Length: 199
Image 1: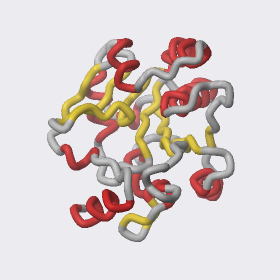
Image 2 (image 1 turned 30 degrees about the horizontal axis):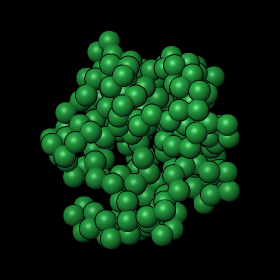
Image 3 (image 1 turned 90 degrees about the vertical axis):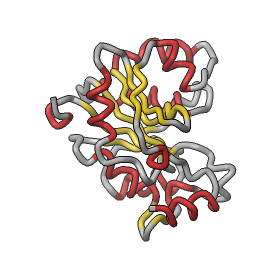
Image 4 (image 1 turned 45 degrees about the vertical axis):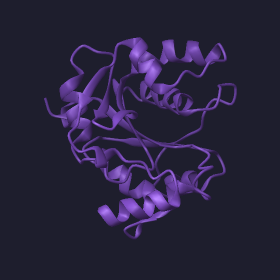
């Protein structure tokens, strides 16, 4: 089944602190566009997408300029990517979606069919995430919206498990991709320059 026939919404994760980057990486330039503009193309088959961002950030301002929803983490939740995913699941559930596809804003080489491939590999699992020979990519994932309750329960208890640990705990499907470079993260300005050279 094509993802265009499913109720999947995209959530771009742009709420990180970018502490190693030396600036807000969501709006760093890659091939003349901001990173977030490049990564969002991975959601082009989906009916809607939202941006998880910090309230006063440039990423939030850019998302508002796109007239897209800006999702702010619950202030009572422990900081980390799963708080952004919980905000995404909450928004998607309210909007009537069955799944969210997530991608971090610093992965500009994502395959254009990555959401379709995750969907194809999901089966009956509650979530699916990308894995390559370089390791797991837990934020490049597809999540059923009914994961909101168990995830919120963990965060409400003051815990923020590692995303990969949470995915393993719920029995998520690992979907293998051959191209490890496609999931590389631009964690530093040097890494971004390196990815731009290899694009």
